[in-house]
Amino acid sequence: MNKRGQGEAQQLFLLFEIILGITVASIFIFSTVNFDSMSNTQKIYTEKDLNLMAPTLLSAPGEIEYQYSLKDIYKVESADPFQLTKTESFLALNYYNITLYKAYGSTNLQVAS
Image (tube, rainbow, N blue to C red; front, side, top):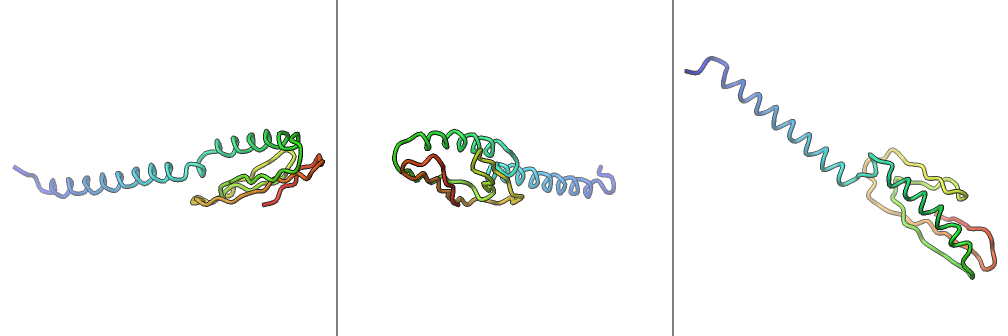
């Protein structure tokens, strides 16, 4: 014995569950594909890496040119110490290189993007 409207309510709940499932799945997929847009961990590790690499490159003898790969959402602000800024782009999957250069006998590190 089915009451009136019971069939429509089940279809409505099924539609709601499908929409909710698609929303949750898309959030999970987006967060795994582009995790850097939601977190600052990669930015912090990159800053630490660059700030540890600069004295190492300066202490090495000779002329050195090193290319460091960064994601598009990060921009280098200053070179001593390195500061990164994060843009508000949600889909930055491309990389670009910054070039760290030390001339022979120099005590300065030059940075070019």
